[in-house]
Image (cartoon, rainbow, N blue to C red; front, top):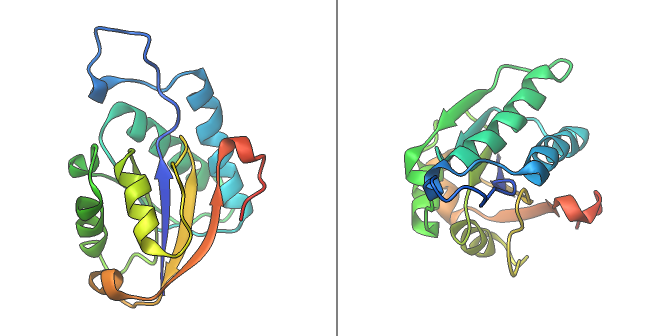
Length: 171
């Protein structure tokens, strides 16, 4: 069984016209939401082996909050932070390719990326649909497979969706 936790990057800032889209940082809300959502994930007792992230500043910053929360949690195992440039504005086929090429020793993985690709992708996984994956939203599934290369055809079970404005109430 493999577990996939999809996370959209936290809210980013549009204040600087000098920065490129790739360089945009998190805004105040993003700096609040990312550590909060990481703690919610830990509170659900979701173990994680790796965090795979877009290398865009806002995604990498979000991933770092999750990485810090997991590495500072009591009894936390070592987890890997894997920056992946192809995840920057990746469409669903690139997301699937990234996941199917994950090392098989990883059982539970967080993937941090962007809209619209993340919304499109999570809507292909199970019967649970989102109209829009909100910033710092989390969509988690289990996949009935032993290897990541079998992920695409594996039966998948929706576990939960959570987002900052849900106040921890999720389905």
